[in-house]
Length: 522
Image 1 (cartoon, helix red, strand yellow):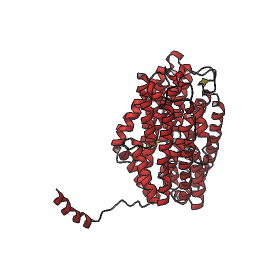
Image 2: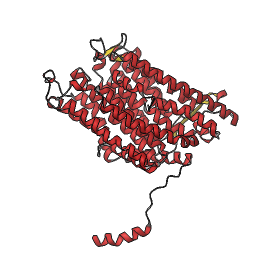
Image 3: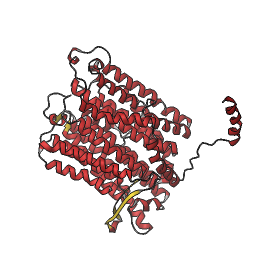
Image 4: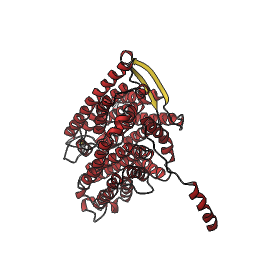
C-alpha cells in the first residue's frame, strides 16, 4: 500500500514529462487525485490506537544494514494526508496560469525559463509529492536521507524555472542552504553506521536505532548533525534567510509546495529522529533549541510587519509559526507535542489558502507590493473574504483550526516556564498586527482607477481554496480526528524519551464538596 502511494506520483511525473503538452495538466491532476484516493484508503486501514502500521521491509544494502522500509504512525499519517490534499489543489489553482508561464516583461511578472511550461511544472510538482511522501513513510534512516536529499531536485527546478525575475538567485540560495544541511546530516548518518556496527550488526532501521545504546557524548554530536539539517529545512533563526527570498520569487503554487509540505520535513524529523534516536541529547539541548525557537517566533513576526511584498510577508510569518512548532516539540509534554503536530497540519492548511488567494490577487493587480494595492473588497468581495479568512487563520482566530494548536503550544510553553510562555504569546499580538495591517492596506480604502475593473474569483478558483477553508472551520470546532491520530504517537515518544508528563489531577475531596452545591443550584 505505502509503496504504491509513494511511487504513483513519481511514475506519474515521468509519464507527464513525456506526455503530449495538451494532456499534461489533465493527466497530472488525475495522478494527484488518484494519489489522494490511495492515501485515504491507507488512512482507513490505520488503527487509531497508534504504533507503526502498514509496514514494509526489504533488505536493500545488506552489508551496511540498509533496508527499503516504510511505515506510518500518527505523525506520518497526518503529513501524508496534508501532502496529498495540497498538491491537487495547487494544480487546480495554477491551472490556467501554468500555460502563461512565458516571457519576462517586468520585475513583478511571472516568467518561465525556456523549455518549461505547464508540463514541466506538473511533472516537478508530482515528483516533489512522491519524494515527500517517501520521507514521511521512511522507517530506515539511510532511505530517509536519500529521499530527503532527492526532494531538493524538483524543489530547485520549481523555484528556478518558474517565478519572477530573481528566481535564479533565490533557487541557488535555497539549494546552497539545503545542501549544507544535507552534508551535515550525512556525517551523522555515517556516524550511526559506525555506532551500530560497534554494537553488533549494522542497521539503519529506526526500530533498531531507537533501542541502540549510544554514548552520551557521541549521541550529542550526532544529534546536532540531525538537528542542524532540520533547522535549515524548517527553517529556524539564524539559518532562515533563504525562506523569504524563495517565497518572494517563486510562484504562489510553488510557495505552497515548499512552505506547507517540504518545510514540514524539518519539524517531522525533529520528532521522528531527534527525539526518537537521541532522547538524552534532545533533553540536553532543549534550552538552546527553545531559545532559537523563541527568537524565530518574535523575529519572524517583527520582520513580517515591515514587509511590502505580500509573498515575502507570508514567508516570514512561517518563520514565526515554525518557531512555535519547534517550541512545542521541545517542551517535552503531551500538550506541546500534540499541539505541534496539529500546528503542522493547520499551518499547512491556513498558509496554503493565504498563498493561493494572494496569488489570485497578484494575477489581477499585476503586482505583489502591498503599497500599490487597496480597495479590492469593493470590486472583488469574494476574493477579499477568502483573503480575510486565510489571514484570520494565520493569526489564530478562535473557531479556526490554527487556534487549537496555537493554544496547546502556548499552554505547554507556560508549563515549561512562565517566561517562555510570556515571550511566545507575543506572537499572538504581532500576528494580529501584520495580518490585519496587510488586509487593511490591500483590501480597504479607495479603489484605484486601474483596479476598478478587477474581476472577482471564478468557480475554479473558489473550488481550489474551498476545501482548505472547510478544513480550517471543521477542525477549528472538531479537532478530535487530528488529536486521536497524534496522541498515541506523542505518548509513546515521551515515554521513550523518559519524560514524565503528569496529567492534571483533581482532588476527590474537592469534587465531593462541589457536588452538593451543584445539586442545590439545579
